[in-house]
Length: 184
Figure 1: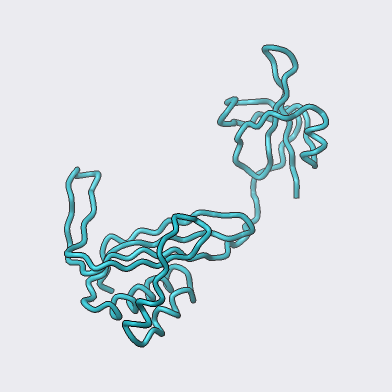
Figure 2: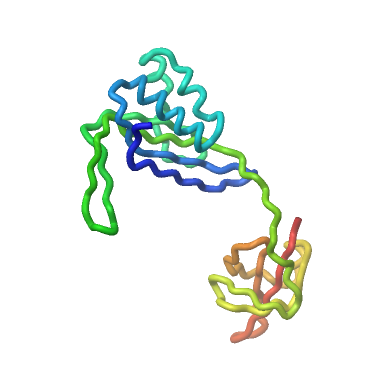
């Protein structure tokens, strides 16, 4: 493939879906050739999603299939723009790099996220957990339901990212308790 500066970004969304944004440059000289090459690349990254691009027969059909980026992460888009060269800023050398390139492309598609087994242990009372908001906290209670924790006064978010939630409650002006909420 004659591609340059290709980058892929995956963002997990809800419901087991991830948005996959791919952008870069192709050296193909025709619009239809560029669409076919990008379709092959998309199939390598998200199998089956580039099939429609590979099957396009005419340039008109290819141009009609373009979907402008609405800047909304939940929408498909495919943009292809003719350019004079491919360029990218190299942060290590603090210089611009240039390559041959005739078309810049950006495509956003979606893929299912495979559920992985969570290896993180369920916290126990007395365990210490690092949270972004309150640093290291000690778990004083464990709940199976967030509503139950809320009813017990645990309402402060800690922004902990893991297989369980960590919530806090104020005991007095200078002290807090924290709980873990483990929901299936």
